[in-house]
Length: 316
Image 1 (cartoon, rainbow, N blue to C red):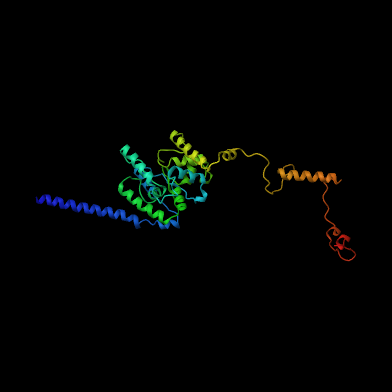
Image 2: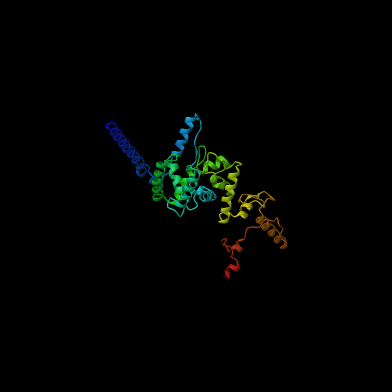
C-alpha cells in the first residue's frame, strides 16, 4: 500500500512538472520573440533556415548553403504576390490571422486520412512558423504558433506580413524567399516573373522539397493552370497584353537623342526632315543649302551708329 502511494506521489509530481514545462514553453511565445521589431527591420536567419542547416549537418552535407536574398515588396512581381495569395490564403485581407473555415476543412480531411497532413494555415500562421518555429507537427507547437500569429497580426500591417512571408517562405531545399527562388528556377529576378511562372512558384509552397516549379510534374502544371485561370478571371492577367509583350520588338528604333548616322533616323524625325526638304524645293531654295543667320534688320537689333533699325520695327 505504501509503495502504491509512493508511485502515485511520483506520478502527480511528474505530471505537475510536465504541465509546468508546457506552460513555460507556451508562455515564451508571448514575450521571447520580438515581433514588434519586424516593423522596422528585416529578419535575419529564420528558424526554418537554422533547421535546414542542422539537417544538412546531420546528413554530412556540410558544403550546402542557404540561398536567400531579401527584396522589398515593390521589387516583387505583382503576379507573384497575387498568385501566392490565391494559392495559399485567398481570404488574407479579410481574416485576422485565422481562417476557421479552412481549418475545419483541413481537420475533416485529416480525420479521413487518419494523420495530420492538411494544416489550413493562413499566410500569417505560416510566417510565424517559418520565422520562429520548426516544421514539426505537434499540438504544443500549434498553440505557440497561434499566439505568435495573434502577435504578428496585431503588430504588423497586411502589406508587411505579405512582404515578410514572400521573403522567408521555402521554395526548395535551402531556397528561401521569392527572389532566390526566381533566380534558382527561372534565372531572373522576382520583379520579372511572368504570370505562369508566378503561378507555378505559388502552387509548390505546400511541399517545396518534393515539387519543382520549373519541372514537368502534372500536378504542378494542373494546379498552376487553375491559379492562372483565376488571375485571368479576376482581371489580374490580361492575356492579350501578355501575348503582345511576348512578341519580338519591331518598328523603328526609339529616338534616344543621340546623333544619328545619315539615313538612320527615327520614323517621326525622318518624316519631318523630308517635309522640310520638300518645302525648301517648292520655295526655290536648294534642300541642302544652309540657312543664313538672321540679319540685324530681321531681328530688330541696333548695330550702332550708321545702322538704322528696320522700318518694320520702327512702326511697332
